[in-house]
Length: 268
Length: 195
Image (cartoon, rainbow over all chains, first blue to last red; front, side):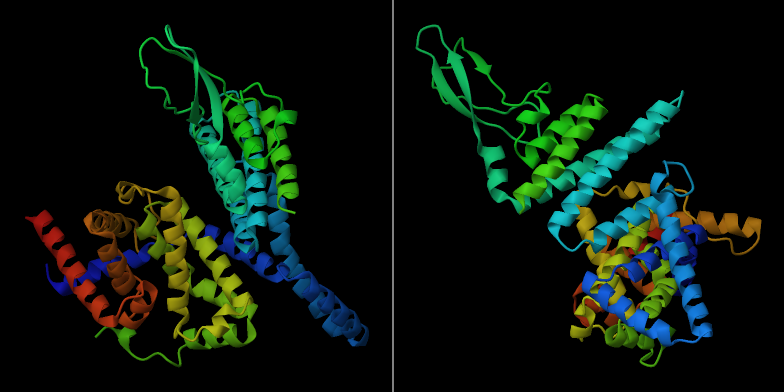
């Protein structure tokens, strides 16, 4: 193949592009975020100046300001209108874009973690609405919502471990007492390590004897553990995920709320 | 030499960059979005192999870019000579973060998706155009990621060598060598397919 021919073919890929609708919606969301994303201090200064200026402005300028505010508000309006959108609805894309924008503009890891929790709640709400409303449930949509929920939970968990390395170490390294019964020797207590990403523990026995042993392992948190006994945000997240997997969405939501509250107190 | 290799110091791209650096001009940023959203999307699509992920990453690229402008970091950084290079660099970093989260990216999706190739030309022309593009994407899919990236940046998105070297943090010489090898690899694939 000649270079020129290849060049023409490659340039043909320039026709690959965003749909006009998506580009427009995203532009409006971006615009509203750019114009509304000022700091509090800047806002106060802006409004103070605006009040002074407005008092001195003649009517045409006031009209121009109103027109400007209308265009900004229409961008913000579309964002607000999309808040209750469900998967498959026209404004759902705007909702997701708005979430992504909020996330990218969040300044601290703590704010991002809280957003992950908020988005996880949102995915769960969408899932429950989808399951409640549809006689024939759209399985791919449900699967996507479940995957997205898990993504948010995992992202929040990662950030919590980064924010609180001590908590991460405790969860990963905390030994669980086990009792090993043997026929001939006295029972020996072995320590095991629990990995946080699995619901079943991995363990290795510390004892040398390996025959005819029955190992009883007590796992601190069971699916039926009450929310009140959970004392860290990471544990609350684990609980929420367990409950979600069991399709107990109401309890899972409570666990996420608990995680939010605990996160606030842990990061003060 | 392709047109885009010429010195474009006084292009509107430069004006936009100046306005962003000096004034953090919001409207200039939105013009930049209008001008480059499709390019960034294309760049990201060939990186991640999925329409929705590429859209998400496009969105987050511009949000991130704005936060860099807003926080004055662009003003402090004199290394970006063009707005394009700045946006592509942000996009590349967004893709890298995506890879880290995703761990594996399934590029076999790349040629199987129904992608929007625009609505230029008549109905038959559009179909033929689509098939050609899909075949080409299939070949691009088989290349190494760095070959694919550099071909898309240079030939499809028309970045010049200097801009590509800035985006990839490589020397211009390295970029030229990479381009040569990538072009040869793609030609070999396409010639083999047509035998």
